[in-house]
Length: 98
Length: 371
Image (cartoon, rainbow over the protein chains, first blue to last red):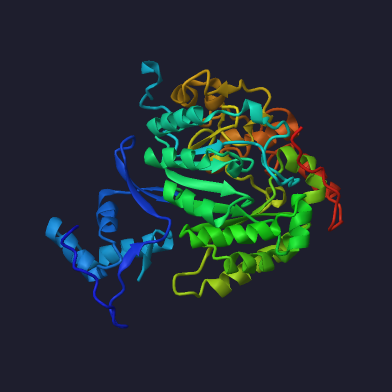
């Protein structure tokens, strides 16, 4: 993840960058062989796609940049699928913007 | 330990450990979730013993450790225990009354790895809050909330709703929001132990319950318009007024386990009320063996233990027959359908309790005391 650009001063129309909400951590769980979201409300067991998306949600990358970074590693990355996943993660209070 | 490895059809590994570090507490709330027979200080597990419990829990699959009590700040080794839990990779949640949580201690606990703090609040103002807590603690709680947010920790405010405070639901939410809460948990009193002893004094009326529900809806509408969606407001309604039971712990011994101050291991925090189950203790038996192989933890797993009307009920995989502790407390048989259920032949027991609820807004309580 060291290739991420340094954060630029954000103009008002800068596209929103997803990040983990305060109090949310990602963890790999050896017992279950899965990546997890740990949050005050409980635990989410992630599928590999959700884990890959969340690992890129650093509060600096826009959703476009997240999609581009995924495209470098996986075939057939769909912007619509990423949007839908991020919306679900926002509704579960895992992800916030800005 | 070789014989404790889970078989393919065994119970899933637990996600959470509720560690009741102590039953000592400066508050005397008449709805306390601790049992009537509290553990004395001399019987509490030591630092090394708790560290060993955490290590065994992590090895078993626990990823969230809730440091609770009583008041966990009464343990001088709390920062050490938090650091140990976090060092094992667990998400560390501190459940506290806030009494004694100074800025310095909050900062230290944040440094040692506490991820999140749940702070209890009794009411919207000091006079009412202090009355039900049986101690002058409201002001200290406001200061504790400030210490938590100043330390950069996310804050959940927990409120137990009962007849004397439920009419102030909206003001309580306003106070919690002003304290910087990211989450607000409004939970109607559950009637076990102290709560059961004080049930007639704590039960709200149906009309109170309905206005409280409206108040929560108004608060959600007001605060939910914020750009980040505002604080999450979780509302747990009183099951005595419901027609179907609450899902027992998401299933008996399925997601979480509780360890009491003396090391007793329970499938749910209230389970010591079920006198017919053998008591397991982590000093005598490894945690993994208790989770997978003990009679207590296997007693109500799955649906085989059920009798009618649960046995053939389409809801049995969602509500798991309701609460085993409530079934035992009200009928003497932990394997019966939760009497809250409208299909239970024991529902008249719950209706009788509702009829006993008094009208007073300042009832006399049997306050929680450590004898």
